[in-house]
Image 1 (cartoon, rainbow, N blue to C red):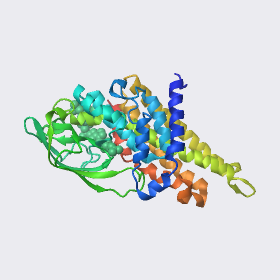
Image 2 (image 1 turned 90 degrees about the vertical axis):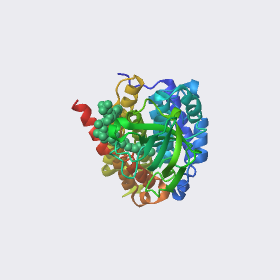
Image 3 (image 1 turned 45 degrees about the vertical axis):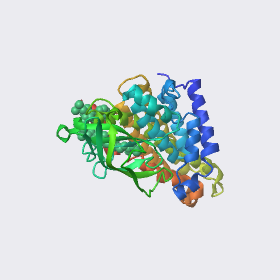
Image 4 (image 1 turned 60 degrees about the vertical axis):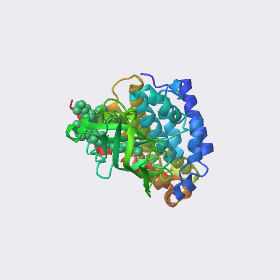
Length: 379
Ligand code: CAA
């Protein structure tokens, strides 16, 4: 077992850290206040290769391993979790899904612009009545010969308005249950596709989350990913990897809050000495640092298994379950260390605390992760 990062991985980590400090930190509070999508920042992330990190260079990607992706996600998330969720969905749900299961034509047409960030992707599984219970899809993709007729509504879609390529999960043959579900690549320009209401959220407020409506959208058959009826398995397999991205996002939110609390504790004085000299604060810092290290190791373990092409579904669920809890716990404590200052926007930790909550909900709630983990244990 080797815990050392390679020179290349360290370079990616350093590049992401510098980018986040210089390009994401300025304006992050304003973007959160205004719920402003970080379009310019995402464009730059694309130029630097952060939007298609693991994609094969022949499809314009960075050809990097999943460990590098975890490191970059952590650094970006320390500063701006709204940028990192856009990055995570694009990399690990949309690019990975098309690269792993798509046809050569789909990779040429869709993966190439996604990998450079020229286009942004969205993953459309959740519905008003199908969140955790993902097989209960109401959106239909009726087989009409050489196309599918797509009808229905999707909810809480990350990159809902900023994306131009959408992977849409829909039911074609209800009698076949999950084996009657397909995944279709939908282009924003297709007739009948409508971007619905923008959600006003507690956290990750810069990320644009929308409902989407599909009204008699004609999707060519060649836009189906995989065999007929593969859509649900496609979604589950893709989410296994997506959960490494969200786990790393949670890790970054936690480590960002911890670094702020650590620095603040050395500056702030109470009872005649820096608060870092009081055991009450020291114990908080010790707990935070220990939990963050454990979360990072789970993220890296899941990434390493994926890179070795071994089964990583349990590992990614464990990483997401644990890292998201750590994100919540650490950000709450970071606010506490900051006292009254922690409760105001200027000090960043209140935003990180708000951003942390969603990591226990999207890409499978903590309760769903426990189902995934326990099923693997009981196999
Ligand atoms: N990996 C690969 N395949 C899997 C799988 C996994 N983790 N989990 C299930 N499958 C396969 C099963 O093997 C099964 O196939 P077979 O019948 O051929 O064996 C098929 O999928 C159906 O599985 P289940 O019978 O286990 O299905 P279920 O109805 O019991 O549901 C579930 C399983 C784990 C609860 C699943 O519904 C689930 O993961 N729900 C959560 C959905 C989710 O994560 N939504 C997030 C939305 S996306 C998002 O948030 C993105 C964003 O914008 C940030």
